Length: 293
Image (cartoon, rainbow, N blue to C red; front, side, top):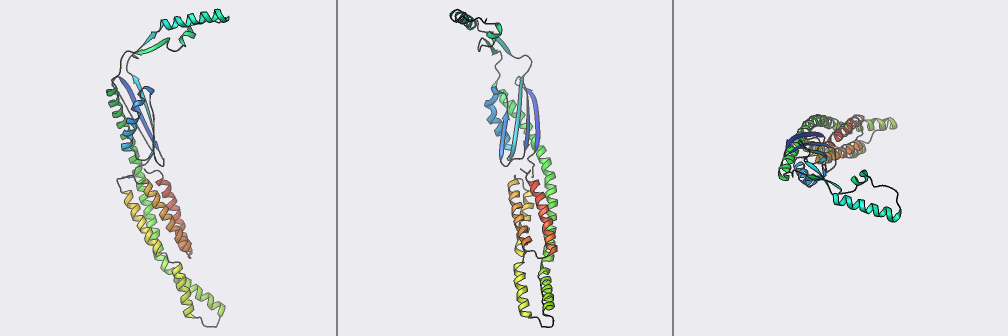
């Protein structure tokens, strides 16, 4: 199944005392890259989240955004370390006396001192329940992402199949026209020599030899055979269940090589015109393939 590398998935739920939401978006990338942004206190779950995504997404850059908020009350209380605050006040008084400072230590100054005021969790979350809920939420978001990538991939597959058929038709045209190129060259060569020599008879053996050399030099049978092989492989990959973006990209390069060779051998305006059309179609296909997983 052809899948695009572009998509978006989202899932949210309330579980284990938290409201959580997972947003997953993916874009084109040469390899597989997963970036997770989540609250610091739950970073120990980052690798587990990545592994869940890697099961479904084989290629592309995936950005994961996770938010988690406690239900109801914050579950935190404020604690004051009075001994620490008194210690700072006494130290400030001694500094004033010893060094002559005039500034006063204010309440705002005290509140900014680390650990004078601390926040303590009243409810300790069940980490196993949170992990289970978060991974389940991730799975759901990724399934939505996969569905979008699959739907877009089907459009890509249909478009590529249509363009592949255009290339096959172009190849059939080349097969019909190619045999006549040598005969056309022979006729033109005969007429040109006859025009130059006027009444002198043409050396048919020499003419036949020249035509044979030209026919061998301009023969494109091998290129046409390899093209059909590439087309068959390309068609098979479009139907494959495995990610095939890289293989398709490689085949496009091989097709381009064969078409360029045909173009260099073409000694016919008709053949050259067909080659130009084929190269244009291959470029369109290449652009589409860049978005396939």
